[in-house]
Image (tube, rainbow, N blue to C red; front, side):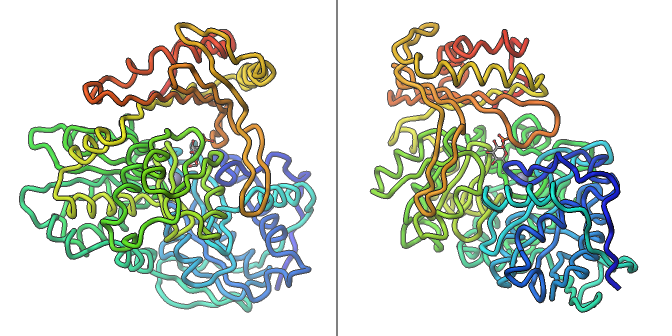
Length: 550
Ligand code: G1P
Ligand code: ZN
């Protein structure tokens, strides 16, 4: 009943999980034994025989609906049964958003979850697929676990599976495979119930019933469609049609399910159309990112994070205040100013959500976020796109102010942290690596040097020691501090699937009330130029301009 399959080729050497699991082209994942090798490595690393293996344990499985989602789930179901899991909970249709996965693991006290997604990367036969593992706390596997998974991918020679017919992913209820119970559950219900506990649904309904408050949520043909339709339209009574692109599509409608001004074009057009909307939002492929827009204004994610923290008490779930907050290192320091004002700690962590988990589990932080359109709280252990949307709506209704005024008043009170990120994509990995290597080598000699029109006040390579478990992470990005108090950060992306992506983040604080509405790129021009010169971006990458400016 449990045939053991031997992996024919040598174990795959390229299965090192990045910041958010293993992401590769579909054509790589569909290679014989590739997905199976990685899944077996997860099972062996996370549920070692010494701890009783997988036997009797409960696992959650779901994905963002992209191409290959259903086939991958069938493979995982057979392997889970052969490995002895007691119970599988699967989102109906094979669907689950990343925050809903985290919610379900916690609610059902599961041993973990296998999430199939490549987040905001495009989907389709020629595009990307991904697998990540979330642990019993609902959060992404920490580095020690992803390292152990990687070691297993190199060591194993066989995986366990069953010969059996596909299960019906669309029929609710229970089925059995081997000794394992499989329950097909509503992907939305538990998650929606959690949001009801955090936000004032009655008041938000009143806001959405107001004829003068029109909003739009762009699900970008991805997973948040069913979630947003249920929560915004059915439960909160927003007009039908508030959610656009709401049916998950295997190829995301041919688009890039990345909620930024370049890719959420339909939303941006509606926000700026003849009948301008009061509020707009979008989410990404797997539902953990958010883009927030007010009437005539785009709200930078760093500002959004700071504003949510500053106004948290307006939402019922946060009325008692915040234990602390955290941001990833490249995220602007707007959050730090709010924390100082509230008298609570603010942690600076390396990029990637997994670093927030320990702080939340230890009760040290309540809200956290990243510049890359990710915001969340301790209600789950992942960032959460729709959570941010409801939080904003709750703040708007309680403060009785439009989003734009909330942002402007925040700047007047705390000053504005102008922030931008420049991405140089699909670079030759050699050149990009050499550039970062040179920067690292020269870091000690940077302080005091001039660069462009600026002076360098200091520089370092960001390292982090987790205050909870003492684990240490080095080489997390090069920070350069300038004498005008602006900052530049360099790091290479850990999530791309093609060559190297260089990210350059720049920020500068401005406290003059007369300079709150200036052009971001102009305000940061000197910092950007100095950073480019110090690193030698043009020489090492052959590029004179970034591919994407956020
Ligand atoms: C990117 C973002 C990072 C985020 C990650 C997963 O990683 O920059 O903040 O946590 O996606 O969504 P990167 O490609 O920069 O390594
Ligand atoms: Zn995502």
